[in-house]
Image 1 (cartoon, rainbow, N blue to C red):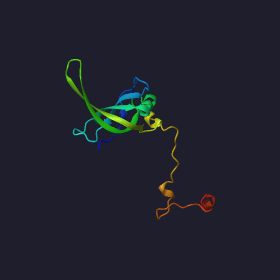
Image 2 (cartoon, rainbow, N blue to C red):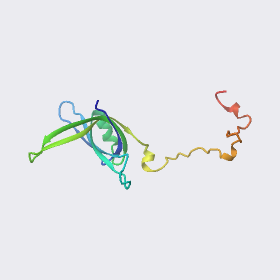
Image 3 (cartoon, rainbow, N blue to C red):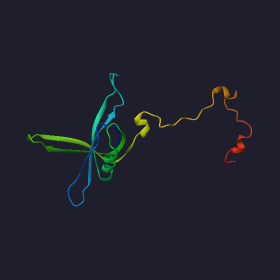
Image 4 (cartoon, one colour):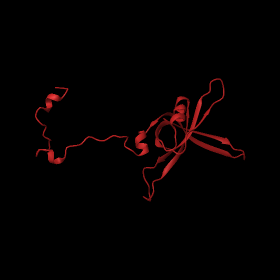
Amino acid sequence: MNKVILMGRLTRDAEIRYSQGETSTAVARFSLAVDRRYNKNAEEQTADFINCVAFGRTAEFMERFGRKGTKFVAEGRIQTGSYTNKDGQRVYTTDVVVESVEFAESKSAASGNDGGFTPADRPSPSQAAGDGFMNIPDGIDEELPFN
């Protein structure tokens, strides 16, 4: 089985081209910076830069939303290949052929703000009864929709 799931940030805007022929197909090339789990030196976090390619609707999605720094989850397969460069040397390639991609964080998380969301106030521990449960005021159960 050949299946890859990656989560990382785009290192640059996705590069989009369209194939030639009767039916042109979108082809997106991009690179994801994927953090490594462990660092031997415990100094700075290291990442792998993984080359990806997507076709069709997935490529069109990347054309629309694939901007540098955006965090994505990509699912696909590894594909290897080779070609001869202009100097006559054999060059080997490894790409992830992305079959599906989705955002890994919200727009507000990416920009560093909370999007206007303010969490509801939680009762302080002083409001809890001695048994660890909070006292509910009388008459509140009449307001609940499921009673």
